[in-house]
Figure 1 (tube, one colour):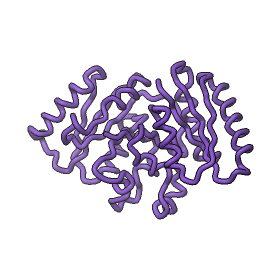
Figure 2 (cartoon, rainbow, N blue to C red):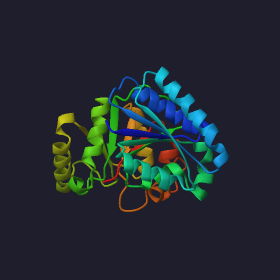
Figure 3 (cartoon, rainbow, N blue to C red):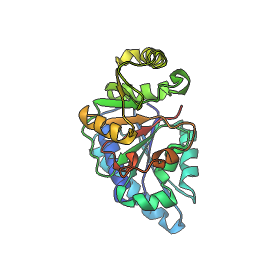
Length: 262
């Protein structure tokens, strides 16, 4: 495994995501973990270093690989700094937290987590603030089943599947699903089957209008531990908030969401 970057600002939300990642990576000897903090005031440098070393000790106690690096740097734009680091390290994953209590503020000002998920650098795992790691046995991949060979980041998704040896559930939500699938859907399903044949994927086609409600219920019904989405065409942030649903998928998901770009 390549580098897994875990940015922390030492808030409850970021520390919960870091601890989720620690439990997730525990016992994985191939993992190279980077604990990262960007500070905007030079006076914070020493404190940031001490906090990172304390978090590193916590990771080691949890049985995470001793290949842990602490990086702190002065900066003014977290997305630019984090994106540059991910590129330099050829990172395989970034793990970040998000909190529903800041939802409306973040809708207005923008969430760094969602902004990072918009960047096509590497997959970003978004960990809900109430989420505790209890294993990842079932992974759901959402797909619109349109030109899947060109738009599905198969390599990134396979890396995650191999990491957890999980069952793959591929789900599509479309209000036009009736008794039988169209020829177009069947052809795309066959392509997806070939793409992930080594994982014996299970397919689900849900005929509902409300994507968020359908995915939320599917997650509960199938005991999904990780949800993979593929941002494309336009901003992931805009996609998440384009519909007037009370519960937004990212802020109110009970399981982590992995944004993997095509």
